[in-house]
Image 1 (cartoon, rainbow, N blue to C red):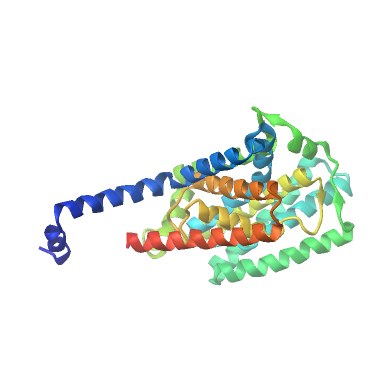
Image 2 (image 1 turned 45 degrees about the vertical axis):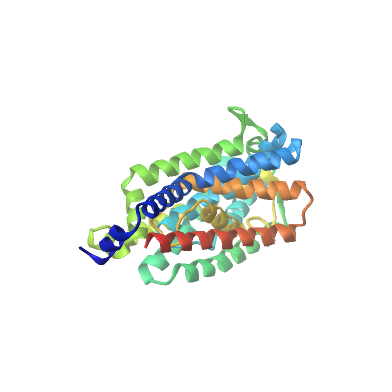
Length: 336
């Protein structure tokens, strides 16, 4: 009998039962904990003020989280693969500036301009993937460099087009104001992308390869998975999601300025971590990222509603990141 087995055999029956109960509780919280936190926050905030759960404020929360929600989809895929992308905010800026300039200053229709903005965003993500997979540079270094370069590019284009661009195209106005199936149109776009991402990660070869690469890259390579192509494709998809978030930001703000996308990468990473995606990769579900986005958005909305300073909001967001990282670390140590 192995030593660990002998130790379990010597453990009193009551202690073994307590251990099993603890493991079941941890498993339950791991599965449903994020959803329970989201529901608890809605109830607590709703009881503290009746306006919080009003239809107008719920719609406001859904519109506010739709931008970071779509951006967080791409970050989820990258982190499931064991990487990270710090350039999301700058990609949002570039895609928004290109689309806004083409529609407002150059008379291009909404869809061709959106196509150009999304193509640029996907291209930046593709560059990230090529540098990471082809040259072997660490993701945090590559995407930090891309963050700075893309931000400079976006601000340079904006300077040539004017200090800010007012987007008056009716498509973006309708995207911000219309309702679809009793939900804000922007929220419907976000939910549609989450549905597509869930199918991609669960039912396609690319999704399975993303999980395998993040779970054990050496084993995935030995199994014949084309790691390089998976990395490039995943970062390109992350860039595409950031580009879509840029379109939603145009719709919400109605203008494009140098502050578009500012800090969005940290909001997306926060939502992903709160949703339970493992920093080590290979574990997590994109549906839980949506719950993480809802939790962070709900807290932010409530703090704004209560008149809390933006500086305190930033401090609380940092605290949420630290708590999520600690929980991820504790969970991985217990699993080991």
